[in-house]
Amino acid sequence: MKTDKINPADNRKCDCGSNTLVLAAGELQSLYAQSYRSRNIILQMTCRAGKGHIGADFSCIDILTVLYFKVLRIRPDDPTWVERDRFILSKGHAAGALYVTLAARGFFPESWLDSYQELDSNLPGHPDRSRLSGIEHSTGSLGHGLPVGTGLAAGLRMKAERESAVPRVFVLLGDGELQEGSNWEAAMLGSHLQLNNLIAIVDRNGLQQGNCTESTVRLENLSAKWESFGWNVFRCNGHDMEQLIWAFSSDKESDKPRVIIAETVKGRGVSFMENNPAWHHKVPSAEEQRLAQEEIMQTLTAIEGNEPGWQTFVQRSQRL
Ligand SMILES: Cc1ncc(C[n+]2csc(CCOP(=O)(O)OP(=O)(O)O)c2C)c(N)n1
Image (cartoon, rainbow, N blue to C red; front, side, top):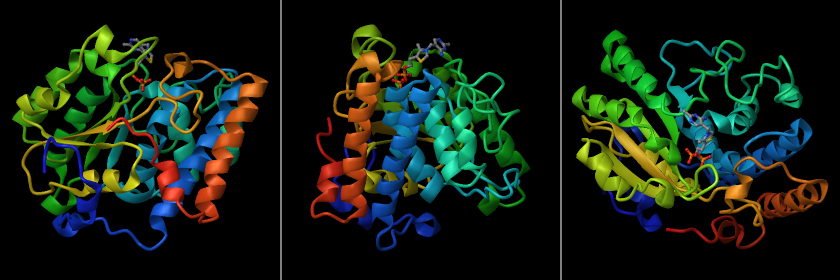
């Protein structure tokens, strides 16, 4: 299955050879729980710092959770292991989501999160690879992650001693970010070089800074655009862990790079933030913080307490 939306019922049928990602009992639940714990920490970090991009963080935290807890071949206790997969957060303004995930995965102590965006902190507003273990590339200026990731994927392929040891390179892009032409130069090169170890993920929330992508510079038909550049395209619900796992584990044998267009909701998880461009950069007031925490904790309690219907609860209202 390529450009079409995924039928969740098909997810477990996917045979991806040795790359198959099998879900253990309770694993899905713990992935969801992790992503809501992360949302709560991001909320506290943003409010403490008085700055951040909370809507952008909440949009991609489910994707990051699946990547770091299920997909990426990494060793947090050996962060420069040569065969590790590389991840680049091209939408670097969502640094809060990456920091929380790296800390939860054991790259650095969770207590460091308290210094988020403080002067001279190792956790500035955009990721800096010279300051923090686990950051593969410094980002923040949009449009650079995919070009760098393409070069990295090509170099890693050349250097690897055997096919099974070729590291994969994952690049998470904002959808508004795709308006930067550099992405399309990289897309062209990635397919020309047949980089099947290059995987782009588009956080397709339909919003950018201050407005919708489609009324700023239209992106659709986005699947057709990537396909015409020679990429394998998967389109899925970016808040549905099963669909994400399916998308990440598919199509291993192809000689094309792969893009996963993950349909998301900016601000996902706090109803008054969802789909509201104001929450790109806004910091919650004390009352908004209280309400947001209440809603996130309600979801987390339902998941962890195994309340009937928790899955429907976390997978509600998708724009798919
Ligand atoms: C080259 C460049 N131009 C402008 C900005 C300012 N900026 C930061 S975030 C953002 C919007 C990004 O939207 P999108 O890629 O859709 O990400 P989202 O926050 O919606 O996930 C902009 C324009 C930037 N960081 N880099």
